[in-house]
Image 1 (cartoon, rainbow, N blue to C red):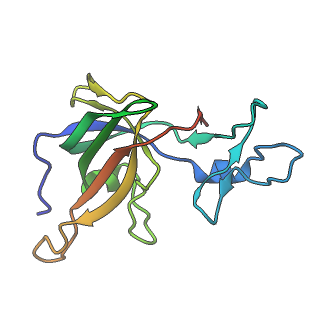
Image 2: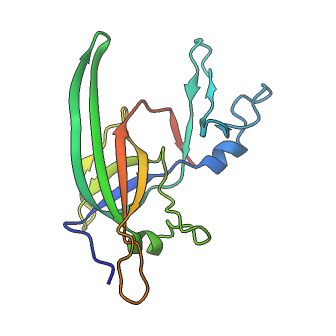
Length: 178
């Protein structure tokens, strides 16, 4: 017995496609050979429009909807800055490893969940597929931590059952879907 989610919803996730970004050449004949910086584990910055300000480009995998339990902390708490408003959001979603395994979101070799930092939450849906809450982008909500929980559950063969994922607001890069 691995338990179940309480009051489940569907989270639409847009996972960062680091392989496609690493394979791309963001500046053509320029010095960059990859769109993903392996040292800093983030997209590289390139000034595409010649305005002197570099932009970050994201490449995302196709969206996937995953059953989850929603644990809101802060949602669009308004902070006033000298340069304008800056809403802050902090939301946790609880995923069941049984659902992640069924959807192919667990690495079979390592057991790691394939929901990782920098993946983006696009919206929350009811189990019938109707939109409950769209997530405005920018600022967007991005994974900052994915933490396995609930180790040792089950009688004959112990399992882990939950993945606690924290999403926080941050500045978004221009996005394209591969």
